[in-house]
Image 1 (tube, rainbow, N blue to C red):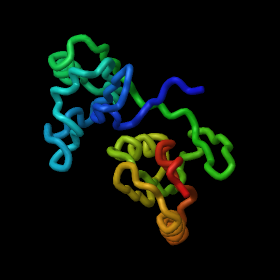
Image 2: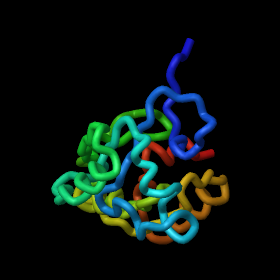
Image 3: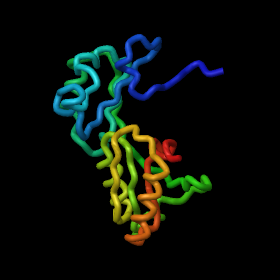
Length: 176
């Protein structure tokens, strides 16, 4: 009964039948080095932002975004530009689904396991919540975690007396 699908990285796939194009621009590294993959982070030329129906400037909390918005406006004067910020609400224990307050992190030694494009913001947010990042493991974006990956982290956790593995919601769905 679905009538809408939201795809990650679907903007550059032109044959895809779509009604709305949404582009996310990371305020901490808005246009990378201006080059396409593999030399840079862009998946297609920056001028193609003109096709977007909406542009979201992510991780904009507290950053000066005026020059980013101006560049977007120069490329696409019609699309609404919305500034966003990440605002953690709580932690979810993967094994049980139980919810823990963010205060759970205060003073805890944790292992951070990510497979996202820019993990630095996530790591800084954990530190701001009082977590001590004893282990930080970064896999490439969209990495599918293997049982070996998890076992290796658990082994390292025991060695460093770490109390929890912390990952993003996006990464959690790729755990075995």
